[in-house]
Image 1 (cartoon, rainbow, N blue to C red):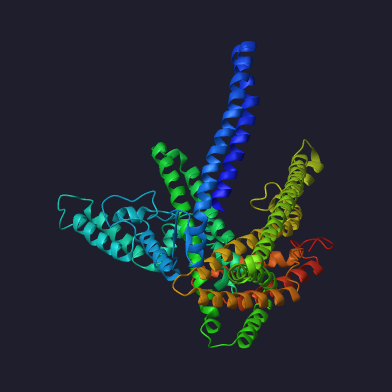
Image 2: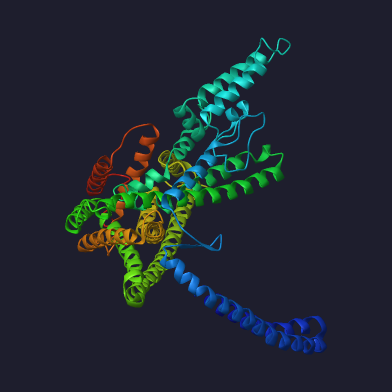
Length: 583
């Protein structure tokens, strides 16, 4: 099949290239050499139009013949439980535990960093982004250095700058003191984490410190309530992406603030490019680790059925009870439908190709999977359009409010005289006292109106985020199931048993989620969205300070926030959305 596909693609590419050449060559010739060039180009175009498709057919024929020859090998290897490795271009036996060891080894290499030296590391996977690297530079280590490397580097540098070793250096004592302070901060995990996020103590302002403590993984876990399903789906892609975006934004802001101090722009640009490449490689490793970890979790979950310690009925009841528990959590039903469908269709596809006549059931499951993928992509496109329109509408409305505020300020400061001028000055002064920091010339009432308009766009944005989440979960579970069903550490029969367990789990999840309305996501409650977002920020800040916050705690806080907002709106408290607004 691969050879046939490659062959058809080669024929198609050759035909398209020939057609394009037939049109493009005369035009290019005419532009260069008039009528003479047109006919010369036409001749070249006709030749190309014939030669390119013929070449494509020849290459395609070779690839199709290669595919026919390899088909027997592919069928034999597949029956043996082997997996095609697209990188090595060969059939291999895949081992889940082997990949787990490989991922752990790669991750250890990423975290290890360089050994302590007098030069600061830069632009590689061994580096991690930090707010400030002054202390790391004093010790001469990478920002990703281990505690052992930091300790070793400290003793090495301390010997160099110790006042007793440098009697002729009047600044030795100061250097030694600075080195000791840097080591004191970096040798403690908590103070090091705080330094990495906020820089040296008392540096920056409170807003920047707060922004740096926003952990996207904690934020989105609260926002989407993914705690109970994390063993199956891992950390959401949207959280990983947000983490990278926030770090990039902070770094860009630092670069803008220090623009006048920059002296080696070319070197800095090269370092930035290297950092982006490192992040890309690190992101791939993180996703790979996520898939392996989820595969191990699912394997452990279905082991009682696989090893026979639970019969089908007992295992089914346990799966249903777990699904009912998940259904009681925030967005639990949506997760159940998404996870359940993905597990179910992947298991049906594998078992269908393994056990049904001519693999017909497998083809049917694959068709359902493709149809669902198309539907999800259409949902993302539709949600994206809605989010863009909502954003554009909010931008225009907020801009109008700002313009009105600026006009009001200008009119209040116009050319007036006497008592009228004094009265206006007094009103202007009062209005200025009520102005909102960061909101330009807007007073409290105008700022509240602008905030209300922003809140009205939240449902459209959250709908888009959920569509992205559903595609992310489906793709991740597809790779998770592939690892489980191609694991050569167990026999083909045991893999089928494993797939049966996944199928039962998926069916129960999907049935419970669908029964509770998981197929119809409702994100129109602006008040609920706002409450979840506020509590999500509070939770990530609390956890950054070492406080323990459970999922029950966050849900209780969210309910309290919704109740308080409803009371404020009913009483007309300033700052609350006006009655009758979307909520």
